[in-house]
Length: 279
Ligand SMILES: [Zn+2]
Image 1 (cartoon, rainbow, N blue to C red):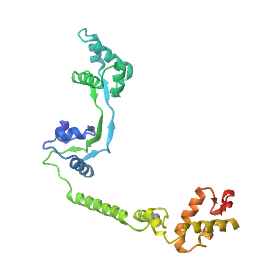
Image 2 (tube, protein in one colour):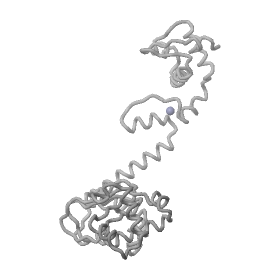
Image 3 (cartoon, protein in one colour):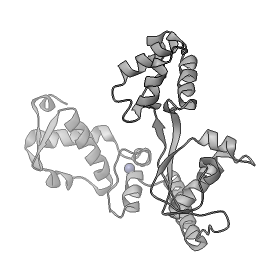
Image 4 (cartoon, rainbow, N blue to C red):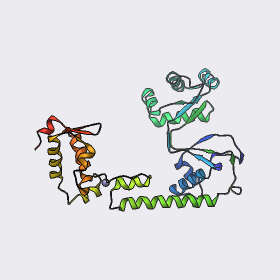
């Protein structure tokens, strides 16, 4: 990182740099694999040695030097096309002398009637000739060093902490695999993972599978016929069904509610007019 950004080691101020993965990997010799490089960055981040942002998209930005641009416009030797281009920039991006403005090469290309490639070349030319700073768009990360920039020999990773994190990660991965393989209710599994107790949700694939024995249609008509007689407190109605039917009971009540055949007000279930028409 230090070589890439041309930075010396030692104490540092907080400063964030644009890190374009493709470009630094290209720069690294021997060339590193992308995922390895990214993992190494994450380890450095977790070890508080660098700061690494989540991936970001940075649009192109441009700042121009007022003094230099005046000279450029005043110089007769410069082509009128170049001056037109600079004027276009000044017209389109107010405040471009005062800070980096987001610019769009595509937009400029349309307005200036030149290819995006040419626009980029012109912007790079301005940058390389000290007329301003041009930062091209990139998909990447922001990185910064935390307080101190170590050189290769000084840098020590806390291996105990690293191994602990690895353990945690492996554990999490195992739980995820168990989640995929579980034959019980998946919602219940997730709730348990976060420390909550939950009943079967009745709608995940496993719940649907285990419902096989229960006849949903008859359960549905039983619920409807109870409600045609009178309004029920939801718990009271719930208890009228067998333990094995209760998961399905909840699902059907939700279903009937969403179909507007019943409404639930303060735990009281009432059948609606359209619900009364059900058989
Ligand atoms: Zn479930």
